Image 1 (cartoon, one colour):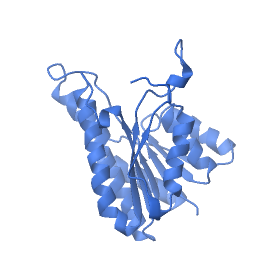
Image 2: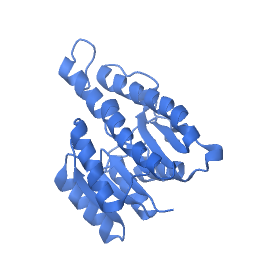
Image 3: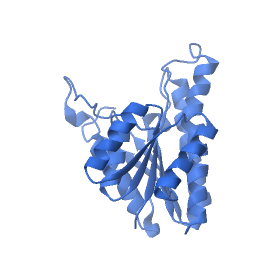
Image 4: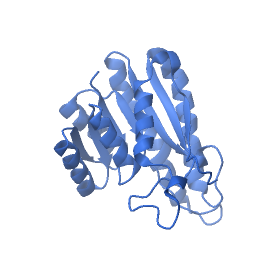
Length: 234
């Protein structure tokens, strides 16, 4: 089955790996983020490898911008049936240090953006045959609040709750919603430095796990997937 996928929040690292993997599996991929130049480079790379990708500059804190971005993807590739809610913002500050604006920004980029992107994508899924997949990128912080990261922790907890609620609402309609806990650090694009590479999560391998969620038969859907490096680093 051909897929039209949107990755909301694409940058170097895991977002790019997800986009490349989905394109290699035959998806037409809409790339959403604010970094227009980087998106254009990634889309050109994917297309040079025989895939289909569209760079769409989008402010994910703006619902109108999100709606326009999804319309651009639909016009190019057709209705969206796969969504990865990947965006997040992290003011690494504790209770007394974080400002109201910083806290709000973490919520705007995380759960509020995921809400609006999911509404757009699920509307497409319902108008077609009802099948589709929505994946949320989570973190250790999704299940265990992190010290001095109150905004990030709140946002990630919210996204996990949204995924669980949506899974129960949409599952009977044939729409698979899954949350992925990335329980460890992701290997940086410039390498592990002086640390053991096996202590990191490989972004390409994470992306393969995301694709497995898209392909799963509805008789055995995963609600939450916990990925961690085999070398314990937590």
